[in-house]
Image (cartoon, one colour):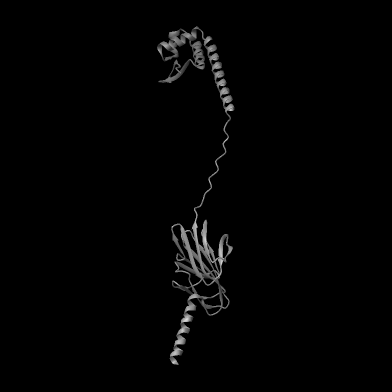
Length: 278
């Protein structure tokens, strides 16, 4: 009889231990809703929203996978917690506790395919990476919802498996600026018009120069011949070579400069004149 009683007690303790490993051990009632956001590198952010109906209470919650980092808040104030690789322990001081942790233990990659696998005792919303293409999902009885502005799969309790790939982001090509080619007939007309203007300019210029050259008299030619023969000369030297008086000489030099035959410059404090070469 004693052995049978001991055996029943041991079986009862084993059952209690098993139940504690899969459901929260709570001295008081709670409800838990979970959101898992999966990133493109396979890392997952797990968020528990725990509602406590009778607090303060000591609570134990199982973790889906070993956490890399974990934190908790009660009414936006940091909450002291303890945890190992499978469970988290805390005393709930308020009606709602938000628990967040990161883990890489919910996904695996083979080639280009990703595999997500989790067993949940609570309602669960899963947000996959952007540009994910799902090939297989179990169970089929899920609901599509929005978490913030992101689409998510919402499941009830059970084992959830998702197989997906992440398609490369396609950047649409930038539209090329619309080109407006000049019609060929317009180009020809513009070219003919430009050539006509150039020819007219050359004719007018040549006529003007011809008229000005005709007006050169004997004294002008004597000045030009002297500068051509002797090179740079002062006004005094030109007076000696051309026998032109000072006042008419200066007047002629100024006129020849204006017509482009002669140019003047200052050298060693003296003004000298020479024929313009260009």
